[in-house]
Image (cartoon, rainbow, N blue to C red):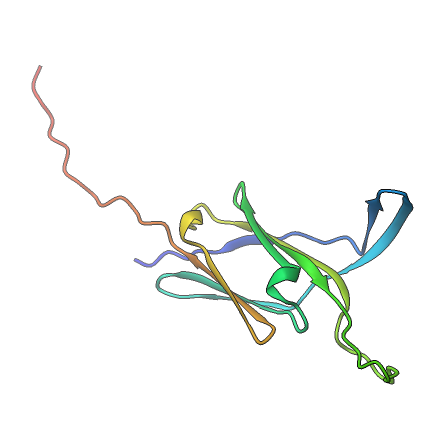
Length: 138
């Protein structure tokens, strides 16, 4: 029987955080939540995050205590002689956090960023195979 491998829940992200830098006053910064799709396959979960404008250098993923966290920054890349007339892409810092089920094999998580789409593979941990246990007489 193929048991589901759910992401337990999505953590709510605050809309602003305070960032401190040496010599500068604390300034609130807006955070946004990039759109995420999660699929279950026979091998585990696959997470897609739409991150237009994000580079590998501007992205960080962490797994700690069954929590997968994506964070980074999208910087505006306007042509020098251009003025924005309309903007829908998010610019700034982003953060998404998910609590993973115990069935995810943390050591085999793999991520790839291609054309602004992040693909994170969250494979199932191998299960112990059933075995017969011999019972001895006293």
